[in-house]
Image 1: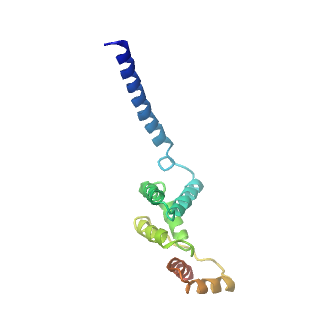
Image 2 (image 1 turned 90 degrees about the horizontal axis):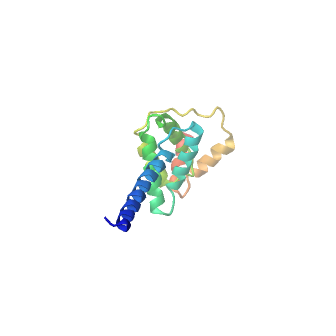
Image 3 (image 1 turned 180 degrees about the vertical axis):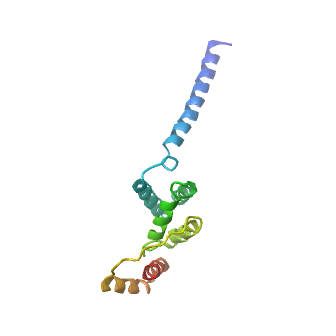
Length: 147
């Protein structure tokens, strides 16, 4: 085999090996697959839920895929159930995100939300106003909070 053909094949093999190893390193560095502290998972989950409202389809799909991966991990399921219960109380949560969270929540452990020990009359007035809002998502969030 001529030397140049050998060099070309060797270069190709090394490039492919580099791509494969790079993929393994990327998977190892993937924040969804490696165990992390609860606060970091909460921040990531909040960011992913926010991405569910992106204008870009690819961003929304990527966020949903990553949330699915987190939901499949035994070490994050309880934390996700708590966070989803908390997020569903937010009146500003979009209808799209709310719909997806309710679906995911049905596959997670059940958690009970502890009601606040005291609620100001101003907060109750605000929730009642939100229950009559033009946005379905705001009405749903207010109804959850009032319950």
